[in-house]
Image (cartoon, rainbow, N blue to C red; front, side):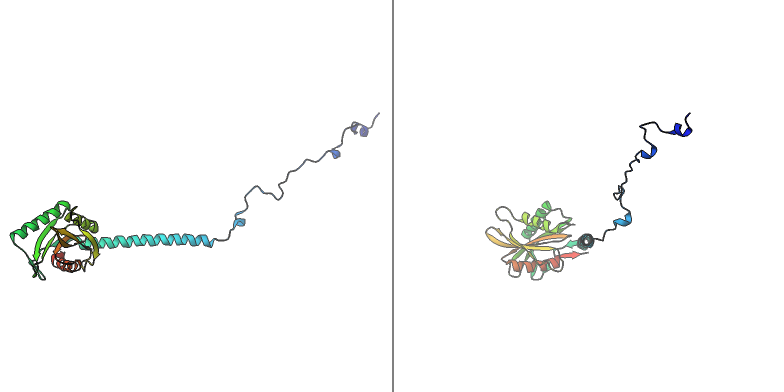
Length: 232
């Protein structure tokens, strides 16, 4: 009869629990699949990048400021120049208003011609005669003009034609009233005439000068402007 110890003995060829291999454990070890902690991601500041951003912001602010200044200056010009009147006084320095019928017809023609091409609230035209018998044809008008320089060029184009355009236009001193003033030359029946004109945000005028240089015409044009233009 076998003992209990003999019945507990393993069968021949069977392995004991001590002989079984341990399960394999896979450890990540030093390799982490998770992102490092935020505290470990501290990067040194980039002064170069910060400087670039500051320069860009500064440039933008300057551009905005310059634009505001420009718009403000233009608005001030428009506001101060728009309320303007033009008149034709009986005398301007050594010039005397010619009130003859022929001069009146010429003045009406000039006034109608410029009004046909440039819409004006009020147009004027006159012929002045100097003490030396040299005539000056003057015409223009008043209106709110957003582009004075462009309108003045249109007036010069209107004054000339394909055979006798206004040529050699140059910018000259516009005087205390500001705006833009230009002078050039044209021909009429073989005679060379100096031509000057001014324009601002409230008025435009052109004059033709017989037997005068452009320099003399520019000086006289500023005198005519001071005598004929009034701002309200």
